[in-house]
Image (cartoon, rainbow, N blue to C red; front, side, top):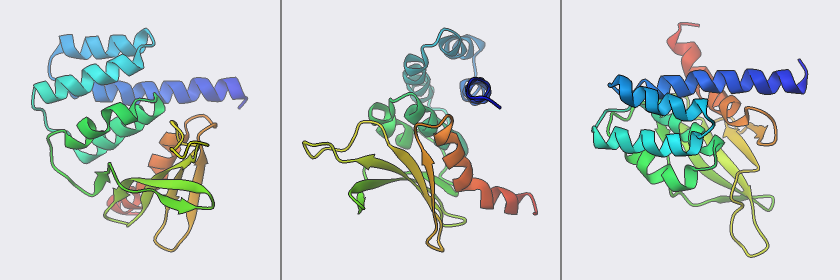
Length: 182
């Protein structure tokens, strides 16, 4: 698969997640509004509207949807603005936790910021940021890193298509396999 085909495949897969997230809203008008944002390329605005509407309607959001919302917000560079709201959405807290406000861990001159944790298998997904010359963390993560309890680190370069989704998949894969009986 060439680079263009990979981008199209990743965008299509992300569109499926977007539609699922829009489907969290009960009214067809709301769903159409959020889906319309995707259709016209206004993902950032659509995410703000979706999260606002979920709060307004006091809708329960499960841990998988919350993690997908967080991943979508990171993908479209609005995690820093929506983090607190996504973490605070109503709903049960299951095995998959979205975290916010944790201190970065220094790793070879980079900062790993814990972001999600799978309570079932103990894996942690962190955003890896570089330190800017003025001491702050880079706006966007350089990569996503999944820490496995045995000490293995799985890295997903944010320059590569679909990195956040591959990292989320790596975070949850062991528990999905176990739940499926395999």
